Image (cartoon, rainbow over all chains, first blue to last red; front, side, top):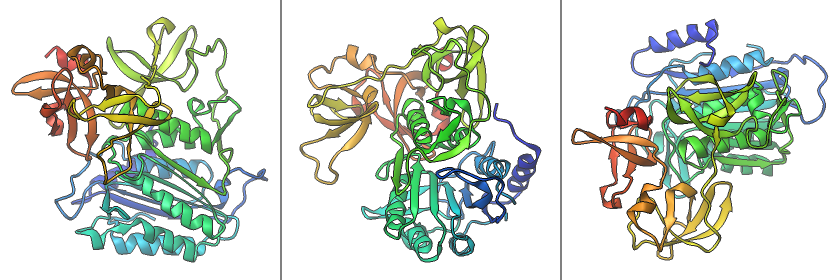
Length: 86
Length: 363
């Protein structure tokens, strides 16, 4: 099973408690270099991210998705673990 | 920052804010999961929470406009898990024109629907976490081209759909992450390479999985469900690599879901996919179709049809039948009953389809 860190579980619970849809947009900025990197390698310390996940919509014509293991939360958590500061 | 509502206004304003604040040499990552739609052949939208029509959706070209106008960093990486997600290549092209390194990896090519499973994002997570099963060359690093390959194979073998990839000004050797664990190459054979997709028993039933490592003499095979996975140790002789069905260039074929009189020609290959062209098609030049969804035009026998891979069991009037999956709109699934004429093809809701054929067959 995919590991679900506690921080992700908290986020997931928060999202699940919303009424009609679960949506997350995460924007992060950081300015801290963590270590010298060679050219051509992603420096998470200098990375910004906008993460958007929508599972339910205001308009019923869009079908909803089931929502276990909200993966955009896991993505956000992974970026943080890789060195992108919150 | 956590939003409760991903409205059009909020998404655009946040993208604008983040892009404008990113310094020189920075990288911006954009990810979207949800519904995508093709409004016109030249206009694609991702569905924000309050999208009610074509004019109120998150226009993919608008993403490009915001980024090209506001972003002054070095590179942009775009990921999307939705129908028509491959339209993000338009953003890649727009960014490249302004000198920004850009790449996109998406669940499907721009003109096709995407299944409603989390397969794409599961694989993206494996790559960004540095899972050794994505490190195909075993050099201890996950490169952009390796992520593309992992996504491409996962979408092909688990979803029968062609993923999207585009990169401009950014090398495929660009390193996304170091692997999180030592590459297990002890005893690895070409037949059972780490990262390879296989058919293997799960709960004593055949299922598609991926080799992710070794556990003593056994192979560690990862099996996926809708939004989770489990790793099981299995003896190598029970793990069968998937051999993609392949038709030669110029071969005349009939795609699953088409009648016997609808013949197409194989024009090119890309991995397990075939670019087929129908002489009578005018609305689109062709279509990528995985080999197991094709059959020879000169052999429409039930035997050939029955040789197609069973991907699901579908309930029809109280009984379960083997079927192949043609498309999904995120909720319903277009299926083909194996051994039956394509006139029986239909869209079925989730409660009538099970992706574990052997389990369903016993009911």
